Image (tube, rainbow, N blue to C red; front, side, top):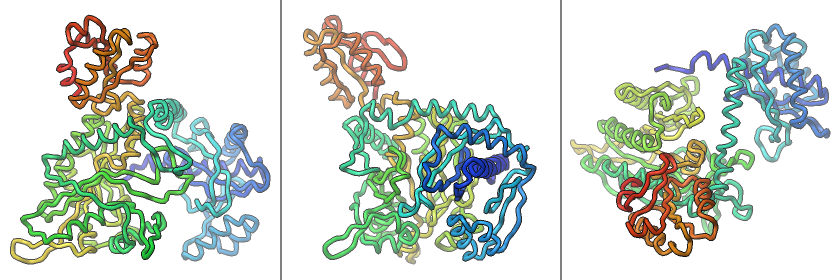
Length: 584
């Protein structure tokens, strides 16, 4: 159990940031008219944004030449030398680069130091974070990968720039492994599989970032929610419903308006202004507040699956991974301080059982981030520091008691409280944050929520936010790629397909089998097309259906089906009752 980011990760970020400098230097040597803007490290490499002026800039065909020039540049870089400079010196250096001048003005207005870093003949405006020398970079361990458009500062009203992306790792082997992973990821891309398996679609008439789910996709969404509700039923959750719009006052009270006001969709009514809800917790506080509560009533546990709306920038939208309408499997618990530990442990049981059903809750395949405040930016967080201390220590104690594989992530807390974020690895080794548990002493106080304590005094409850799958859209994007479309039977949109040997002679019995399975809540269909039996079986396998039920004269006589499992092969003749038990 580590307390912070490990040093190796920080060193890797320094390599990546240094390579962003090398990219800018190489581009300037090949395209002297280009204006470099910003170039940060990323989770897998780096990028740099350039203004190439009226020229066509660069394309992916140009990347090998730029990459070659980067390696030439690095050979002559002995060090990254930092120096603090005045505003005047900085502006003189970048007098022909309006992007750097804008950054210089911002740094100056914030009373921060202006620093340059120089390597060889290249100097850039930079805060630092580099390797000691280019000798610390394996020249075989990076690769330029793509070119894309990007607005300056992410603002659609500003200049469109050219962004060059690169990958970077410590060794050539790590780079090679990542490239192999990318190739596998392309095969598993949920956008590609979503079309092939007929799960969801997008429409220009509806708008970007607003997915439409087909019957099969809707079946998967329902299966996820049904599974979570079934698992958490013993823990006393009550389902609620809230509207999709609200007065802005709700989010001004909660604190979300100040933090996320620019991301809200505004709705203008005849008399008032409303916003589309981007989250549900403030609404749930008002259900709690609608009745007088006693300590005997607590915990109060609300849960629902409801769609939220966030005005994401078009360029950031990506299939189901980043959307403007996201359906959250959301829950909020209002409890006494003494009840916190028990409630969080109950949530952990739900998380464990749900992800075990997906085969993901296994040793080495998941870990937990204890997301806490950044001590250097206390202004980012609402509420009493003493409550924050208590909340963080409570979560840490629970993580240790449960022997969770946790690491502390400073600066990743929500603005109202710390959280436990469950990180799961998918089938090709990528890590995703899915379930979350957040401990909140802030919002109940801001909404003046109360309960009558045993001694008759009025006290403020604690609020626990919990999501098991999180956003269903994002969760589905992860799960589609994790299983490459071959879902476990409980999740598969079609769990079984009945295929008559002869579409005419055996279709009546095939329909009888389908009806019996459907009455037992199995998601089943039939293929009575005029194609050959072999072709119909191959089609079902292409669709990755868990069970294929072939029926002919023999099966009709014995009231069985010949069952082939996608995962286990030929299971032979099986009664429908046994098959239903197996699927369920």
